[in-house]
Length: 430
Ligand SMILES: [Zn+2]
Ligand SMILES: [Zn+2]
Image (spheres, rainbow, N blue to C red):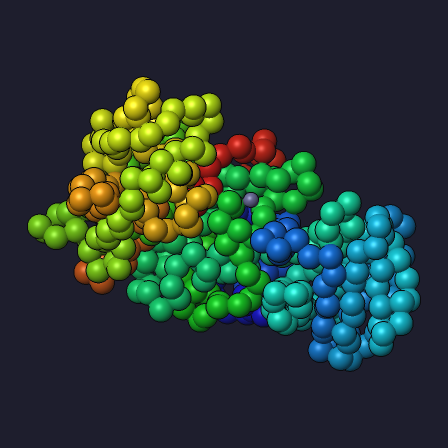
């Protein structure tokens, strides 16, 4: 169990923020001592990278299957259980000991004992441990597996998968606050499919209990319920690996975004050396032939030009990120944004080669050399910068105040799932 007994550090859970009457003191105390029971559930769709047609569920302490339509238990087995769930048509079939024992459109799966893990195996994943319960549904194309998990446990997984778990405590705590803020701001992001988040970077990366360490649990517990607010509203927060010297203004990366005052880009350099300089992505370069660039530009909609002769940078923003490029062809010019160029490169030749839009172009004979800094979109918190600042003794509050100036770190008080679905950008992906 991730959050057992023990003193809950920091602010009260947000369920405890309402007026406290003396009569409720003992109840409140029990909430503080054992907060797990009162956390809200988050619904996360698993295996979104591979979309399986079957999944094997294992439990060491027994499990049960329930028909959610009439709330009837349709299968129970104690002890060590290994159950296969398979999509056939519009039904989920379950088989135990090699025998098909039933089918339903939708099945609820839970461990017989509370707070015991379930282990899931697919073609690509072997025995990954998950907390909470599962809802399994046959869609026309694949088996949809939704993990219903307590929000702080969800956050532990997100922090462990979005930042190296051996990083300093203050960096992990800053990540926990950012992850919690993003979670609350973007609840019900996939509400059309009846879940909150996918398990990919589109939302935040979630891989069950894999990678979760004591340091991560401590970071989530110590920042319990804390989120970033601006004028009392929950902030739009983003993070990225390495800014390369300066974080970016949100509207320069995503032109359709509201230019929020706390997302206008911050200097990374205070001592003559950028805090994110230890990052392996701080400086990079990659070369490409003009013919290969022509090939990737063919992917741009309505581009009918031919015989590319030159590619030049036309405009950069305050963070020195490329905003506009000009491709000169034999029969005309094409203007395109740095973001479109970056996205087309990733789709055509693979992601994280051209690591960001913060680059210069040098020509070497028939090759173009892209010399760049940083990895990711550059908006919000620079993770390697948070690492560098934590190494220099900064606490998580100071780190967050730097990357999101003018915001306040306060407990969340909103009831869960009362937000309209957000159509935002991914926290860290593009
Ligand atoms: Zn998503
Ligand atoms: Zn940085």
